[in-house]
Image (cartoon, rainbow, N blue to C red):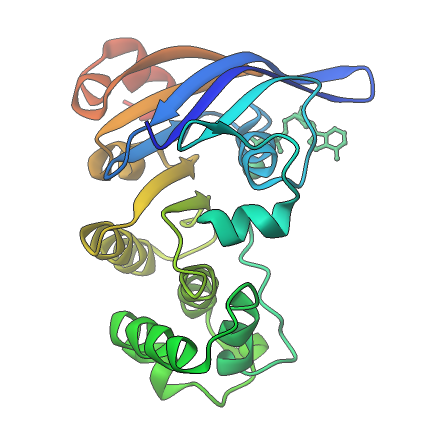
Length: 235
Ligand SMILES: Nc1ncnc2c1ncn2[C@@H]1O[C@H](COP(=O)(O)OP(=O)(O)O)[C@@H](O)[C@H]1O
Ligand SMILES: [Mg+2]
């Protein structure tokens, strides 16, 4: 497994946000983590990327416990998060935002190659490389946030609600790009409230309910599961 989460518990003060959760992501997979607002999805991603310190449990990346590894080193090791709400640097250009994503990497030619790779994947960002990021549309900002994360050449991309606030057409476009990024060789852990979209693209999925994983299986199985359909697919 590329990433294994074991008995992970996270608290905000006395409130337990994650209750001994276990899950794993194999290299080459798209794994979806679905669940309602407040279930603990963002907390899970923040704990993997090092923004939150768990009270208990292990985060194994390529078999090594990274719980004590600071966040910036986790980026250098191959873990990149695309935050909920994109959080691009609005007063900076598209290219400067992308440059920020490469901060763990020193080599100049390598930087140029990676920038080319990202511009190939996101031609719209190339056209707008000198534009202030705050003036991009929501979908373009999502692409920029993904491109910025890809600048660190991650093994695994942690995506937090990439569809949030986007029009249906833009949602489709963003999901097409996620599929392409995955085909390029990046493993994906996808957090979504849009369960249908997530299950359509994922290999496997976990359902998170108030801090506990309650259901897991092949994405296709979950798409055909009656209680999942009622609770998460609005059917
Ligand atoms: N900084 C925080 N301080 C206190 N409670 C928090 C904080 N962030 C999240 N929570 C709580 O933890 C739970 C999980 O939140 P979150 O991980 O953001 O859920 P999701 O991403 O699934 O919507 C919620 O009950 C939320 O209110
Ligand atoms: Mg969230």
